[in-house]
Image (tube, rainbow, N blue to C red):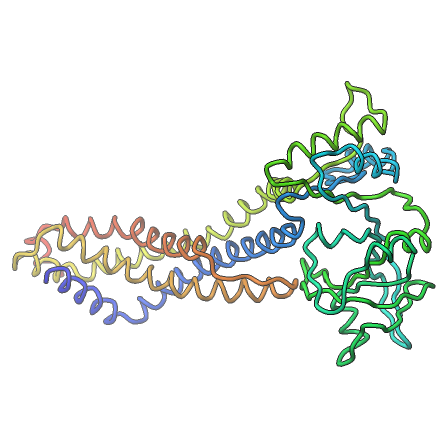
Length: 406
């Protein structure tokens, strides 16, 4: 009964001062919205990158001449490395007992044409037939190229969904001929749509047999990139260690020097990206939190004004038997009602704004428990922290002095 009565009094007090309550609510809303926008956007981008990397699978790793580069100095050092050759691939296939499948691959950029239509700078990949068994590419139509296609250097192509949309909207693309650079290829399969990351389409690609790729573009000047699948997740580390020893021996790396190649898993790539962006994330959340502090100060000022204006009311309530804790709870309730309501609205607005920003770079986000919990905790915490001093001041008023207040 007492809690219900306190809640009703608090609600009536806020409703009686609509403009003041509205301005306070607006201050909290702006603060929570800014924080929620940043948190949701950062979470959305991180999740999108994680989804992209998950295509490698938990038992898969990549070996290449130059992996992640975090500085110009590192890049200049790594570019002196020797390319990874076909001989290295053969030795890993023969000697790596923990490796289930190995697919060498190479990439280039070229224009792709069909009749009078053309796309520039399409990613052209050359890979062996088992590439699709290692990397999570889903076939929407047709098939991926076979072992025989690779052996006989057939000009067949597995294309991304953007190629289908641009050239064959409403038409079956299987069996159609496209021109990659100066060479004709027959489409044998279409990949399921994957969307985009940071505004870069993941569907604008053509994959051809590695042998056909070499026939057209020659031996990759920067060497091959290897995608390797271990026998199991448990044997991933063993497969990486064994591959490392084979490559070091094949490339004649002295025992006292570091590797002249990079080995990466999805987790290691994600860890490096998180470390690189950690301080940026903290900075963005910190800057956006300033508006929330300002909103909290507004809450405190408004509640202080409210206590001053309602001094006689507090004196009357105390003279009728209200205790200090009742007055304290009432004013904290008022503060929490304002900030919690502002928090809920701020969460919704923050998510909508974040979704709009993320969709501009071709990503999608969904409401996360962390973002919602953070928003409600921040808004409620603001009401509690900045509302407790005015509430304590109201609770400690002397009823005789309060009744005589003009």
